[in-house]
Length: 391
Ligand SMILES: Cc1ncc(COP(=O)(O)O)c(C=O)c1O
Figure (cartoon, rainbow, N blue to C red):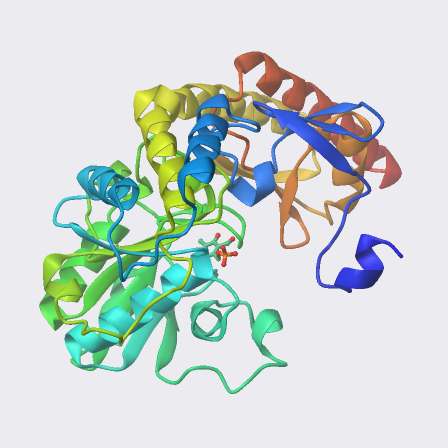
């Protein structure tokens, strides 16, 4: 019996059996290489088989892998100091966990406890995960309809509309949660001014502002944090994906004021802050700080320019948008045929919904690898247009 039969039908799958990786490349079981613009849904920020992370994990593995947070660990302390040292202004506390959804769950509890309020405003198009609390803040009804009732007190504001947000935030609002760049709904970059206005609206109402930087954070958009593009700091920031170089890890960062509202035992995680993830995390942060965000900005700008050139000659493309190495290419039709052709030509890419191609390559991707992606996409879009008779 194969993987699919055992794991059920939960994932949209592609016919590639990945055996190994290096940098922005992966190889399948037949020895074919692919430029990996999936990167484990944005996890492989440092590239695959990263030497520094492998060494840090191996060294930690042979020392100790589990030290529960009820004991102390120097490895965890080093990581926590590094992480909070890099965080936006005012953020100095952290809860560690093992995934993005868990980081969002922690944010919900922190916000409700610290404000004593119950209501949460999320955004239309938002994706915050699929555990029940996080799912309640996720917009797409298709993920939720079979699993109700959802958590009470959640409303959705139109992404980017400060006027509508102002009308929805009041004295019962605990938190407004925003992805500065929405990922799953097709790479929607917050319009200029929106995060600043959200900050003001929350401050005016005594509500907390949370940024979900699980996909957009850690250098992905060309800056350490996506919110750095607008100079706005949140009260809570959710992280996960590449935080520990591929070792599962999540974090809900917050202010001293919010964290001090939480009491012993009100939240916890068995795996949260384990030394293995922390050792990998410290190495990951060092490498990102060491210039990877700059590479994301430079290669991302080239990729975006190339994609805009290509899209000008392909009527099947509706729009190209993004920031750094977080890029969406919206087509007029379902992208599955294009994704399959890209695989045949040695490129792995993601989709967002049915008609948007999504690129989240490792931040170490080279200009040459990006050129290969552009060339393959040009061919795949041409083939799609031929299939649809629009050439
Ligand atoms: C913005 C955002 N928030 C939350 C999540 C949920 O993370 P996880 O799948 O690790 O639970 C994701 C995952 O794609 C995400 O992109």
